[in-house]
Amino acid sequence: MTRPKMPHEDRLVLVVWEDAWTSGNWVENAAAPSDPVLVYTAGFVLVEDDEGITLAQSMCLGEGGNIWRIPNGMIRGVYRLVPGAAA
Image (cartoon, rainbow, N blue to C red):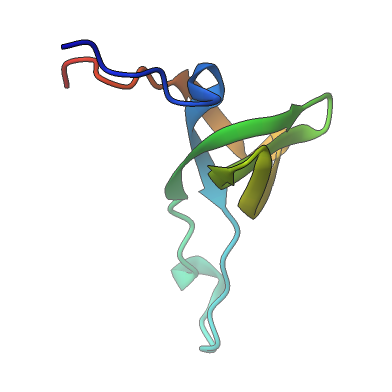
C-alpha cells in the first residue's frame, strides 16, 4: 500500500541553529561559559529569505501554527526531511 502524500511535505525541513542564552549568575569573565547551544527545530518552510527562515510546526487547511523565525546568522544547517525515508 502506498502512503498518501502529506500536504506541504516538500517544505518539511530540520533547522540546526545556535540559540542565544543568558545566565542570572555573577561570574568572572574567564569563567563565563562560551559553548554554543544548538537547537534542532523541524517544521514546514513558510518563508526563506535573505534575513532567515520562517517555519510552521503544524499545518492545517493551508494555515501554519506555532511559527518560528530563525535569523540566518544563527542557522548552522537546513536539511530537507523526507517522510517515509529510512532513518
